[in-house]
Structure formats: C-alpha cells, structure tokens
Length: 350
Image (cartoon, rainbow, N blue to C red; front, side, top):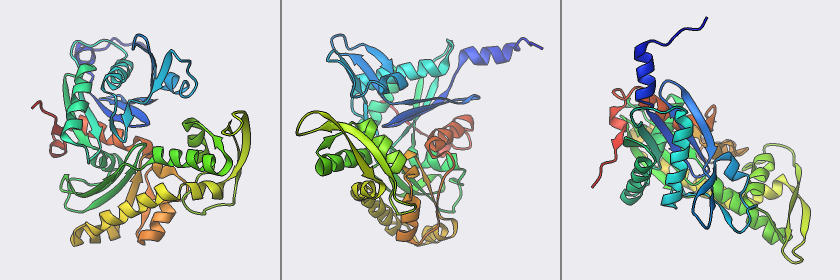
C-alpha cells in the first residue's frame, strides 16, 4: 500500500544528496549516500567543436570515439588518473552529478572525490575546482588505495598492514596501509590504457593494420592474458591496412596478445616488487600472513594474479567486483565520516 514519506525523510531528500565519486581515466562511478552506486559511465564527452557545447556524455559519447565527423570531437578529459582537460572534465562532472541526483535539491551536495596517491598539489586543486564548479558544496579528497582497501573490507584503521594493488585505466597504485594512512606506496602511470596502446602498436608493427582504442580494449578483454592460463584462442580483428588504406581483417592469437602486453605487465610487476622492498619488516610479515588484494578493472586481465603470485611467492587474490571497490570504499567513508575521519583530506583553497 502506498505511504506518504514522513516530513524528515522528505526534507533529507531535497536538502542533501552527498556523494562520492571515483573519477577514473576510463570510467566514472558515483555513490549517493543511502542509495549506493547510482552511476557507472565511461569518462568520455562528445563536444561540438564550433560552440564547445557537450552533446553527449558517458555511454553515448563513448560510442562516438573514433567515429565522429569533423565538427564533433569525442574527448576523454582524464589522462593517467588526473584531469587533462579542465573545462571538459567540469562539464562531464556536472552532467554526472545531475544524473546521479535525479531530482533537484535545496542544498548542493558534499562530494568525496577519489584521487591517485601520487597526485600533485596542482592536480589536487584542479580536481577540487572542477567538482566545485560542477555543483559541489564542499569537496574532500580520498586516496584511491585507501578507498579500495575500505571497499574490499580491509581493516585500514588497525596496526595490521594491508596491501592493495589497484590497476585502473590510467594508473596502477600499490600501497601498504596501516593506522588509517599509507605507510608505503608506489604509483605508476601504466595501467589499462597502456595495455590497449600496446595492442594497437603490436598490430601496427606485426600486420600493418591500424585499429582503434575500443577494438584494442575488446581484444584485451576477450583473449588478452598476462600468464599462459588456458588454451590458445583466436579472434578476428578488423582495422585499416596502413599500406593500401583499405579495411582489412586479420586473425590474432591469445599468445600474440600476451606478447604484446609483456612490457606494460612487466612494469606493473616491477612496481609491485619495488613496493614490497620499501615495506617495513613488521608490515611485510602481515602481508605474508594476509596476502595482497587486487582491485580495479585492470586486475581482471586473465592470469595477472597468477603471474604476480609466481613473481612474489605471496598469496594474491582479485577482489569481488574490482571495478567498484574504490567508489564503494568512498561511499562507506561518506556514510561513516566520524569513523574514517583520519583518511579524509579536505582540499582547501590556498
């Protein structure tokens, strides 16, 4: 039977829609307090070149990548985990916040934005300004590895060390966390995007065929791997012949794609080893006992966990729903701010 909402619930709904945002290089997720994840969209904006007006954002804009006429440009405003195009990022955030809120509210939302741990002060200011101009009342920043660890359910506030490897679109973050802080961390700008670029380059060199980034991503998901974990598989790939300029189809095997991905995967392995070398002995002992958790979309590359297990001799597992760990962790911080007060860093104006 239909019930009218009580006045307090109604007021809460129209007064505030506090939210957390995982502003990623490849996708953006939004968590709204009391509602959970309400938005998961590609970080892409299609703009009309003449006017600079956004004509599509998210899924609709991603469909246009590599397919636009001269007067329209599909842009990814995030690069290597940070803002590459301030104005377009602001427009994208404004649209995503509007989509997440769904209804008008009397008060602008407070927003927690997740950022790479290796972000500079200038980049922090750019994130804060973008979120404020997009409609946030107050902006707080949260390091992605801590958000990922909280999202997985690791005890970040305890003295026991927890280690997280977060592989996103633009960055790989490897951090050891204890007592609500990052004790040691390694952040490299090698992740999913670089894997896609490596596949594009391999097909260009091996077959003289040029493919787009969306095709490269599809190859990576379907037959890409970091470790020989299954039988060799084939996939037909369509692209443009660089000699004749005519469209052409070639067949590629999973072992070839593994070879193509060798360099970016090796950079991630070396970064993990570096992070382990920097870890204090007491926390290293905790990691031996508790293992390492992998999060982020890049951790879904087949066999990457097996390769890291072989290289480190440590127990390594991939989190459930790894793409959602960061925004879920930030959502828990949002809903229990007093408990996680130490991990939130307000981004203040100079």
